[in-house]
Image (cartoon, rainbow over all chains, first blue to last red; front, side, top):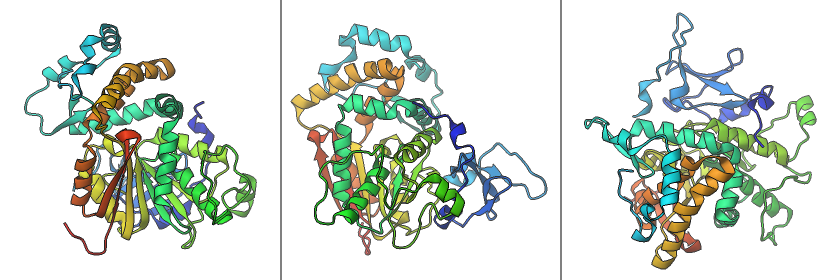
Length: 82
Length: 335
């Protein structure tokens, strides 16, 4: 039987995983933003969402951060194909 | 289908008009779509027997696994008559991991390899001399290192992943969220709360530092990736020097008589099974076609060497239906 994703709705994000995770684009460490539930790479200017307690580090799914305003930019960073 | 069939003539789809009719009826993408595609497509690759743009392949593969995730384990058992469990058991036996191993399991969505890894090490700890011959995925693990009641964990806020230097740990990385969700719920059902992490990521662009894992596994995932060479290069990058790369994948059956049998089973039975059990003919058609498109044992071994690995070997399972490839990131890179 399929489990609906709402089962994990309250799953806390386990921060110990940050010891191994880096931004796939820049390979630099990530910052955990608790409020937005994202992992932020300041250097690349992108933020990765955490869905149901599982961090999504696929570059195309990341959000580009605009320093001035919160910018929900749809287009993916172009740096994936190095 | 525009692409010629790369299998023995015995299993030509035209010989089976009923299967062919059912297939056409259910297929939404058709050969005509490919014919009207502009000729100046920048880069193309294969999606099963179909030719698609490279960008498109990743998306189509994502859709396939999103659709099959719910019935993935059931279909694996049905299609292989449960033999896939033996292949995976053997794979872990070959790895023979020791306590303290940091494993990265790529495309490991539903957790088959990850759970076996943890179970193997736990059984080594319990009984170092005798190892259980048959492994089965537990639905209920006895209290031990990997089973902590969830209310205890919440109260104490303990380190759930247990990522310490000396403990074994597996990080499961998959590009597909649905597959990871299935894996995570299976872990919870089995009472596995520690020693495992789940990350959504792309095998061609891994979110891990260089030289960070002792072992890397990819089971039945690499043939679905758009750029196999990039996956291998990334695998090389994230492994520590001395680290081991292991791949379990469908491969070529060299014995001609058996191949005919295997091909007719693949093309006549499996998609129908997919339709009956999972109401999804196309995904299983893609599955059997993608197996034919993947390089054979020798070619794949050469690709692994190309990525920098040394001591590259392979072992056939069930006459080559599956194969285990293994390589090491040697300290001195010889190309």
